[in-house]
Image (tube, rainbow over the protein chains, first blue to last red):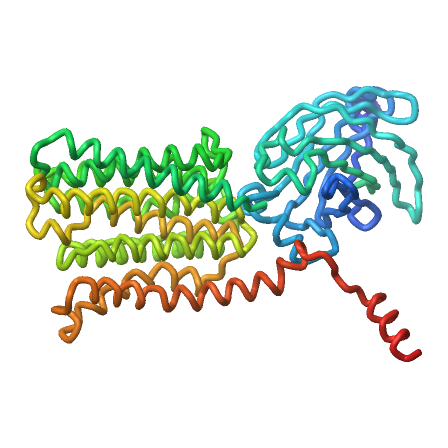
Length: 194
Length: 326
């Protein structure tokens, strides 16, 4: 009897210990970037009179969202520059060359968060943005964060817009002219829980 | 966007700078030896390239960020250094050639550094990249060796001009492929090689007693051939791996200067110098012309719609057809 009690007590202690230590790991939900329901698009001025629109078709990312302590939430995004698509194959080829994205030298554009702050309607995320081999710290406002469970898969979505100057990222200034220096990047992403 | 006025300006300034430096150095001595002539050409080319690239404003950065940066800031200073040293009679020819071969084999690796070709983890892709680099390096060694041999054997300003022709055509082809800055980088090379060659020729022709070289009227400095071949190879390599040049045209343009060897055929060898020079340039120009025509056609087909004013869409076609039916 005593042996049975001692064994069951030990199991109980182990179970409680496991629960106590396991709880914090479940506080943050981890999501993978859902390529099907997301888009990373951009637009840049043409001749300072109109806008050229394009998108990147190959993107990957991860979000870890901690509802209890939002400062522990992390966001990362990797864009394959080779997947640039402006609905014109010749222009896409041109954009892949060293005068523009130089995709053979710089195959990815990356964002990795370094700090996160909860704001009304979303998060203010500061992180390292690397494009064309140059890294700058930027702050983006991710609006959204609403969760939805569809067919047993939990999803969360965010959207943001940011303006960047190509000249800040080492793009050839001689190639800035007909196509403006500033580019607007629009990110609408949905994450699926792992 | 290409800026023809800037290109002409860079070409003129680089040509003048390299020629003035060569003339200034050669004027320092009463009689210049082969070593002195070679050193003058190497320093002249180096100075001209620095000034020409500064005028072109190629947005270079240190540490080098891309293939073109590595070409202009690592490969070219290395070849200038090797050719400067190799000119000295105390340096054994074997040592000079070992340095040249080492640079030839290292150049593809230097140009591809940090690119997707070397960062891949797939075994077959990595081994293919290494095979490509070794074969390219051997190709460069072969072209360099054969042209240097020809320069020693029969000389002639036409070898330098043939290299200039090939470099200029490769620059235009790279530009037509859409890599504007890569193509523009050819201009200072052509300008400085021309400037240094013409200055050396002017000295050997008009003041022959100032130069102590056998067959001085037909002399072409080793440094000119070295810088010319390495710059031609590197521009094509960058155009092929970072731009849109295909392998066939790139190899054709690299090998084109070797057609200067045709004048070594028994029937042509002892012809008048001007005839030999013209024949060499014509022989080199023929394949380059074909490559340029093909590059222009590809440009008209693929790139010019980006610059063209009107691109007809399917909808426009439908409207036109509807109008015709009425």
